[in-house]
Image 1 (cartoon, helix red, strand yellow):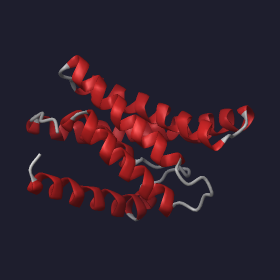
Image 2 (image 1 turned 90 degrees about the vertical axis):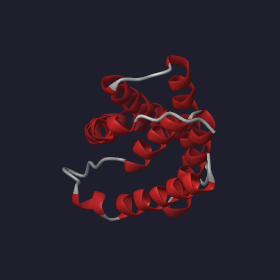
Image 3 (image 1 turned 180 degrees about the horizontal axis):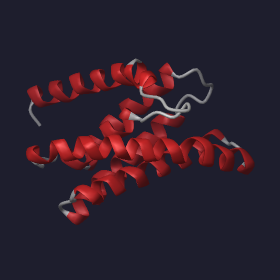
Image 4 (image 1 turned 120 degrees about the vertical axis):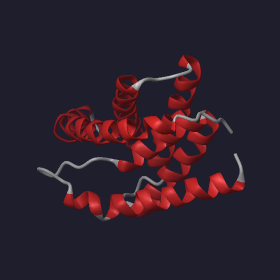
Length: 163
């Protein structure tokens, strides 16, 4: 990937975090909002492969760890890195994903990312079940809706280049 493309992805990274921190609060319904950061990581992994997905997943998770007021520094980094790598590998194995498959991978990736985060932070089974039903499931559906719209609008730019 050329330096100009890396700069473009970095600028998109900064824009996504700015939108996540500001605009997503306005899009919340019943305290449920989309996760633009996961959409970013999944999109980069699908378009650029497992190495770029892992790289940007780590930086997205690290930024969330630093930004979030939690004491589990590294939990987001681990979950987002695994998400970026796994989605990049999945795209490499199946060569091409259509729109419903991309939205399905986004939803599955959201759940995997949340479950890894819950496991790393050591939450009890009752708390995880409650968080899954009240937070993860609605946010996943909302993220899949926003991601599906993004993937639909992005179909014209289907250039797959791996790092």
